[in-house]
Image (tube, rainbow, N blue to C red):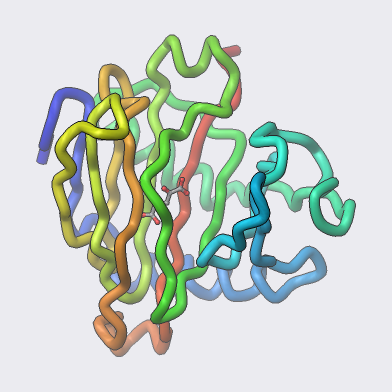
Length: 208
Ligand SMILES: O=C(O)CCC(=O)C(=O)O
């Protein structure tokens, strides 16, 4: 399960029952009073996901975190649900990493969804230096997940992230490039009654 130092792929880690509960909460959130939206990033490109940040908002124009969505509608980021936080803490503990997540980026991918290779490096310097992990949960359709190195041009490994999988990268892997090249439509477990994919990435903005 440790695929590289500090990077763990926990295959089918969540039960279907847990997945169903998380999917119900994701659905309510993305279509709730502070809905998910398609960010337009620095340079003018539209992302290929619908995004909703919980706990803290990630601004796609400034690449900085902020309490309200000043790049879109000025609404406050909804709080991080306690149940989400507990799942992420448990997963980090399982792989031996300290973690007190206070924010989550929830992305919805439709059949054409994807995300270019990038590093998650907008959290506080101390959080990155401590190697506090990113904990990622996949729900619904399978994603072709790309996991590279610390430089953009490093070789990239493709992994299939299935519904219920967790992927944790911290310590020496915290700043590795990663992305999603495509979704495999129609692969979500029937029991979830979900077209597309939710991905939740939990982070801890700063050390305590
Ligand atoms: O959807 C995924 O598996 C990756 C998401 C991601 O890279 C991110 O939110 O920064």
